[in-house]
Image (tube, rainbow, N blue to C red):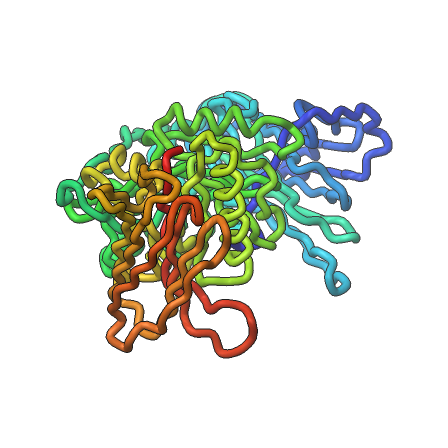
Length: 534
């Protein structure tokens, strides 16, 4: 469940010094003199597809001694085919207490099937716009029309802190541009005066009370009002508790600004991990459970060969790399970076759709390929709600993880090992095992190490899935279909096989389908149990 205008974009290797032929026009109106930002001031900078316009200048602090605000307005038009990022430099003098930015852009009518205008926005401070650098101060994508920053406060999605002297950059992301072009207007207001005090952030603890080694339920893909969600962290935490969750992961688009705001929502009963949905133009990836305050840049495409660098950053920060909704059809959502860096894959995203069916089939093919390669390496599957706002249901679906404790590290270890299944709600519980004739035993994500021709008994116990069908899926396809389960929702299925016949087995619970050959929507599915000595 991804919003079409999640924003976020790129840096690469394109250079173009022919600025006189540019179709991007800018002018800058102040409440005093006109500050020209004509085409001759436009140049392409840095890596791929990033433009930097001429600077917006303000009077010195001495010129604003009365402490009143100063405002400048910039107008321009971006043509179709614009780069992923357009940077507007703002020369900030000393003595500024607050910077505020408001923007608007036109939305002309376009023919059916043609993308209209969508313009994202964010800001970098005087430390610059270098990819992966320290200058990031916030991003709201297309979710807000204005924002402010000062030492003691900031708009959700933005980082409070001093407004220091130097060249700041407003980052525009022309997500889609209509054939007529995208005309925009940006108003920058500086307020002078003594800065407030920046409070050191506090973060939620990395451990909750837990129940020792147990199955814990979580939702690792959620959006608050710090990106394009509409819920506060407090509202999300309340919904998580109501959904029976033991843990959640914060994953706002392209900003870590929410991280300190979760501290007051954690408790003995709810572990809150911190992360980000890294939302590029070539797909989205959830950074799951990174160190507090970790920012992961998103301004690159698959062709730039930059993703590996940031996947390694996520892992260095203690997080997992989880490609999200890999077959989603929204603009920029389809995953194009490959799965070589993935620690897990979000196969089920929000309400079950054909996109998820394709993702499940693709993941199953990856299981087949990994098992046939003989190296024992495979990528576990997950499911998350991607909830943004009402009526999105937090915890639908949810990943149920066998972990040694309710801590960030233990939950991540369970996810990475594939000791998990995905369920549509807290009502659905599964117990899935495989056993040999001499007491050998394996659970979800494990390997039953018996000979090729050893009889194996696969057992699935289900509660909370009334009228659902059971499917057992192997590297050879669906080899068992049973049910439907009774209206009580509980039942036990046993199936016998050998490792020679099935290299792995995983379970699916499907709702009954009204008509047609396609299976019904998922109610739950497991990661595989592997059979035989690898």
